Image 1 (cartoon, rainbow, N blue to C red):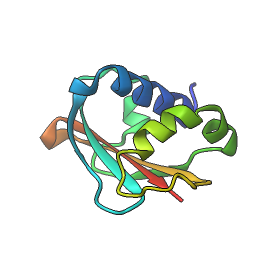
Image 2 (cartoon, one colour; image 1 turned 90 degrees about the horizontal axis):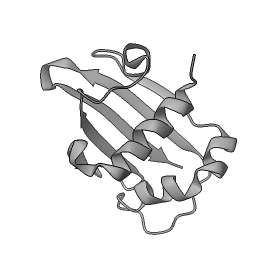
Image 3 (cartoon, rainbow, N blue to C red; image 1 turned 180 degrees about the horizontal axis):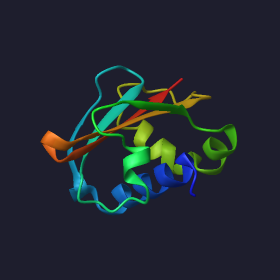
Image 4 (cartoon, rainbow, N blue to C red; image 1 turned 60 degrees about the vertical axis):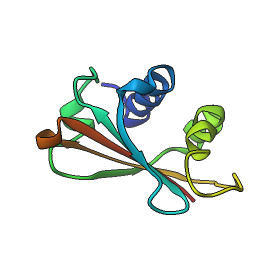
Length: 109
């Protein structure tokens, strides 16, 4: 089974190439970006990684952050923070069936 990081990498990479899949985005706090994504996007084990009406919160591993710094920086630029000096990235995911959307929030600390 793929790790949460593998699924997050897939989703973030896919959205970078296909921003039309993002149905809404907002930077509610200085260090976060929240995305709603069309839930027709095919994600392996989506029910596990994007639980229906429940939040799943995970810290991305240091290896993942180091390996995917450019990709994470692209999303960091969507936050209201101007200094990319983060060390940890937390990801919150959920499925919002009534909105036909997946929720994905990146929090940079």
